[in-house]
Image 1: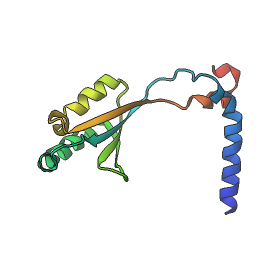
Image 2: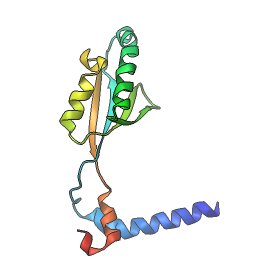
Image 3: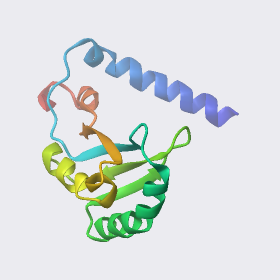
Image 4: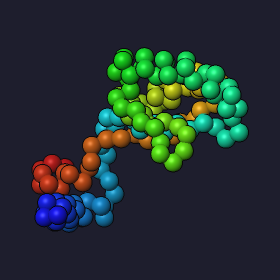
Length: 130
C-alpha cells in the first residue's frame, strides 16, 4: 500500500508539472503508430464472419510476422480487435486493413487513431525542448 501511495504522489507531481501543457494547444508530434479498433459491422451475417475467420486470422498473423502489426488485442466489451500498427500513414493503414478478408467482404470496419510521443513530456525537458 505504501508503494501505491508513493506512486500516486509521484504521478500527481508529474501531472502538476505537465498541467500547463494541457492548457495550451498540443504541439505537433510525429505519428509513430496507428491504433486500429476493428468491429464487425452492424447487421453482419455472423455465419459469413465465422466462415471467413480462419482466413482472416492467417492474414492477420502474416501482417504481424511482417512487422506491420506490433500488438493485437481483443475487446472486453464487444466483438472486435484492437491493433497497434507499425504504420505512420492512416491511408496506408486503412488500405492494409481493408485488404484483409473481412475488410474485402465489408464485414469489419476500423476506427484509426494516429499515435505519437506524449507531447506534454516536453515540459520535463525545459524551454529548450520546444
